[in-house]
Length: 320
Image (cartoon, rainbow, N blue to C red; front, side, top):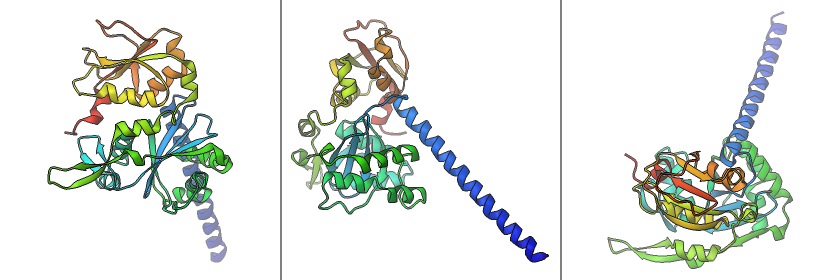
């Protein structure tokens, strides 16, 4: 009698454990869907992420996930970090981010700013990349084995489950000629430090020349809308940083400057039709724009006018 009761209890516990795992999986899927639509506004755009390893890989997928572009950055190459952290080798910056419990926020925003691309996530990948062709590397990063490792906590990152599955499906089916690599070798320069030492640093101007049109978003480019970018804050170069990201995606920048509005949240102004475009959806979602007003004293010179506030600029100043 006791044996029968014990068997039923074990079965009940196994069933309950299965329900808990199933519920957790549904929760992960829900969070993945939410994160994906929160970042992209429900539309389809080019998306990029940084894969932690040596070298670091910036992997960028086109809007329909039929082609990928890879940019490699050795972990000893230094970049200017966001958040007032200073200049760090990329590998050291990732370590610092983890030690400060930033969950990739400083690391991702720093790499995004350094390369001038909208990077949403970081993931851990395999170091077995030496000698791989670009398509082999992409399939290695986005493998079903790595999906399982991410689910079981063996690989960490901020890429939600649903997008990871989508990119894994894309990677396993992408053709070899649809995966290209952009070389950044000419963008690595020797820079002198105050203590007299030298470091290998990423030169953003040289990198822009190397990138050229490799990361265009064809859908945004095809709309052909002109965009003006205004910095309404006292933080310098905010407009130029945002414009660099937009230009790499192929948007037509007609003005980059300042506006004395002192906004907190980003505002995106334009005609009703322009504000319904894919370009507007992307800008609104990436820069977290909440308003659609043109500040007083600003004359519109473009189809869309982007006014950046302190919420966006805060990543480029030291945390208090």
